[in-house]
Length: 250
Figure (cartoon, rainbow, N blue to C red):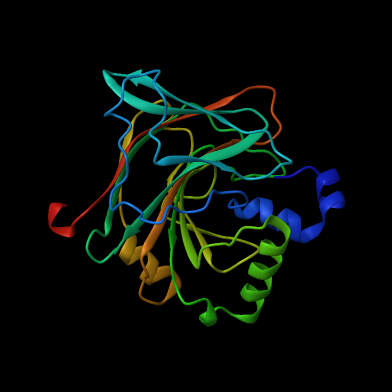
């Protein structure tokens, strides 16, 4: 994913920090809301809701661009990336046992896997959880400490990353090579449905329990991320409203 010259200049810990995708998020507000601010409630061209904060991955990468646009009569968020990587993050204080179902709409116009990133995804939704850091393995604690030392930021206890993969089959899991505390789930895959709005629903409580083997803590944030490796063209991804629902609302 990252240029070899960057790998040599900043070292393996820095590269890991970049790939983890949490490097320069702002501090969480003192009181976090229970629900996500909706894009559809705002007019196209207006500012992104203030509860969605810029999420800069690295000073070594240019930021991606985000703006509110109209699509089929509804305001949605468009992310555009060209050799760039950044996202938006929305802090929450939510018990996944009360609202376990995460629903959203997304649309991808193209995929651009490379030899360096054969399963790279231009559209990602990241759900982060609180937890007891004393339960982390020695390897994960070491990585977390090195990450914080390099970036000044603290990784969440655990995270689920939902992606539209290039090659990984639908519903398969991609391991993060730096830490066991980030699980990547290919919700969609391949080029067949490019350009089509898809509605997704995931039971994040069940996903967490299955992938981490323990009960989830509170959900502390949701992030969206559109990125692209070095490319001669921009990749675009579109996000509709994202919400958590009760199980009986399925």
